[in-house]
Length: 79
Image 1 (spheres, rainbow, N blue to C red):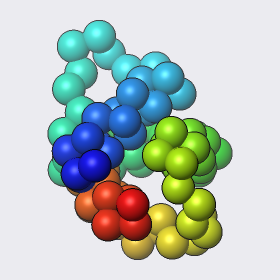
Image 2: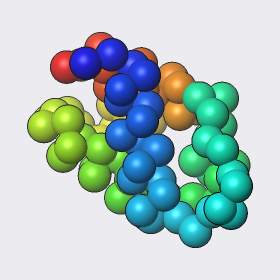
Image 3: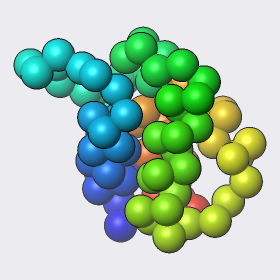
Image 4: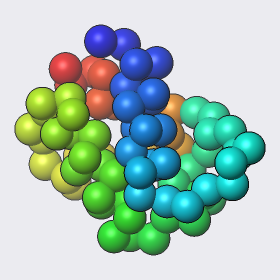
């Protein structure tokens, strides 16, 4: 699985957790904070993504990326 596929999974979970405008497009340069996610939302989105990817890594390992694209690349590299 590549970073693009991981990005799409993250976007699905962002849409499950956050209330976004219908026409809002999520890009790899977006941050979850910029989309309105608080710390609980971000943790939930990441945990849902890890579960979808069947990936077991410490949550603290996901704190480095500055945007969703970087998070996608990080998670793809752990698969």
